[in-house]
Image 1: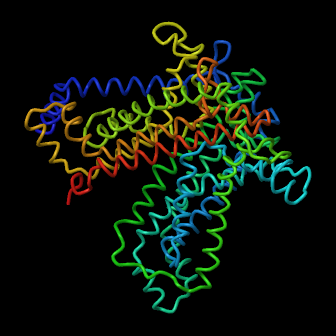
Image 2: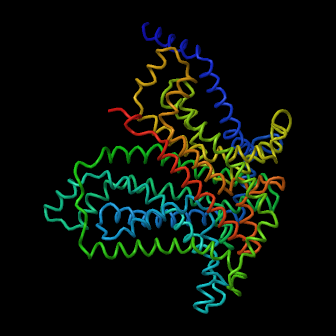
Image 3: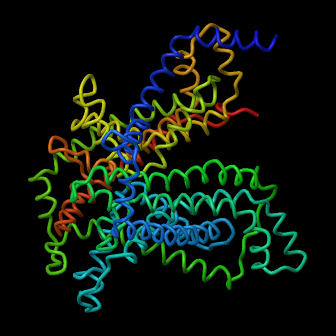
Length: 569
């Protein structure tokens, strides 16, 4: 009886705050329309034909040899990239946490390598790979005299994806290794075990859930990647590129919908396993901080090969990125290597200024909306109790598992000829608004996770005291909660901007001549073989994103919130 009365009081208190109720309603509508609805339309297209439910579309698609090849190619590529990225990331993390390095060069290299994939378009390494090792490559043709070198296909995609994604594994595993208590390993060493025995019997078992988590994250990124396979894949089709070509080449929207459902099912299942099983198992296996300082390895038989390997990989990655601005300054790649600014001039004279203006404006608008929405969602998930909380959290995170190509096709189906082809939403397709919405949806999971982590460190009593003084939810959020998590807000802002301005897979099917984006211009120029122009675009884009990151980091240091203010004992 008392329990029912308490529930009624909580319900009454909940509905007495109209701002909170309105905020939840707006979020539910936004998530339903712009995440669930496009995916639902794809599912309907794949199973509903001629007024009845049928699996004919799936049967037709599964009978296509091209689709079967693309599906097996995608799995093979995902396993190769997932394994290689996890292994290299583990070696980098192990060297940083366990090995005593006598120079700070390696530490700086690690910092640069972990930052570069964040601030660059996803296909920059493919561009560099072609320019260095392609048929007219600087290394293959000019230096080694190899003619007709073929860098396209599985090996090319696997290399560039591994170099792009292994820093993610490195950052994930570095934190896990730091949380392993050194006393466990030192006790095994005191019993006479070798370092290899300690690693295989103590360190590795503790890391296994984290390694599985890193592998799945990289696997999902690999199978969902569109830009790299499109640029350097050659005849090696993946699901993402096959879906794109099914729409733009075969003009088969229903077949593309069925293919999209297959790819989406694969990534969502892996996402659920990663998020709801491996993440929790990792947190349960590695809890708290180390109880003592770790004794770093000084044995040269261990430190020397690991340091050389990591330095070589890091230097190669940096070389690949350096080739982008260098390539923009050569007159004609493969033939005339004299320096010139002609490609920058050509870029600015054609559509460069419009592409940069449109990209920056749209990305800034999307970043502000994403940062605010992600903090609101995080606040509702962590601080409030209501029935739709689990739904909001799940759907906002679901976008992380949706490949960009799938989302783009879902938006075409949903907003070009779906139930929103008339009415209030009639004019959304083909405008800058739909691009902004796609940017927001793609960046929302990252900002939400950051906000949730920050809010869990805030003592509940701080906000409860504001409620006791009569403040409503909006006032508490804007005057108490948001100032305490402004580090996460600014971090989400810059992350959303970088992800938006470097995005391509989700928007390549939605861009119209009315709005030009830098990434689509790079992709278009690279497909035409105009590598100098593509490098010029990529160079300016990297400079913009890296500059924004540096500015935002400086602002966070100046105006950021200390952990002592936000945290509780």
